[in-house]
Length: 277
Image (cartoon, rainbow, N blue to C red; front, side):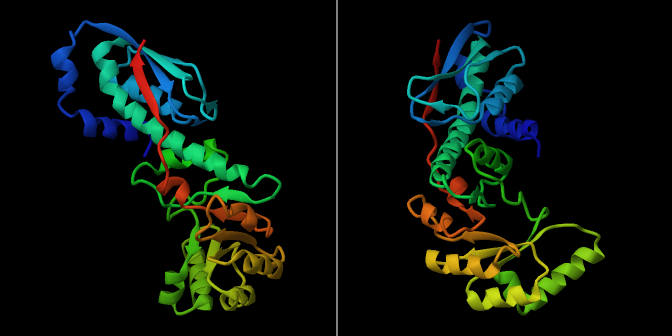
């Protein structure tokens, strides 16, 4: 789904037959100006989205960008100005702010995690734990905050997780079946496999045929040992219960990637408002 489509259906959800609050109180010909004010420190994200919201509501609105995505912002900073039909500004206001607040919250949280990785080679990844239909925007916010995107969906990377392994009858069966499927269907996708302990890790190393190993819920000391055992043969990823206070400890094990679902599913939106100028 494109950005334009996401915004189109979001506006349909909110406006439907009309913004009757504005239509009933504001003269149709009334012109006005408004400014977007930041009320909380963080990382700004969603400016392109906000611009598109105002444009879809009314192409005649004038949108002036004052800050760019990725900017560090503080209370009182002004992100943009908008001018034109007062009713149009009010109709677009909440949808634009909803996108900006959530995206900025994700970017801010991501930047906090990235700061804890300074001095290591580990990269921070997001996950598929996103809001339905908003994955594109939430993953964009992760990138704005300095993180990296994992697979976008079920179609652009093979992820053999614990249930796949259990349902397939074991690690060897799962990897072999995966390779046959990719060959039969002429697909070229990277393969990642999740392991829960050293026994499963040994099996994966014996079978091979994958690109990355996800070490799920390994303690830091075990993660370090696992990374040493893998010895650079495959990419390594740590996942499971890693929080802001512990991510540096995990990164110092030498793991290539750390994935954190909380970047998109457990965040606090940044406080942003639109006020008359």
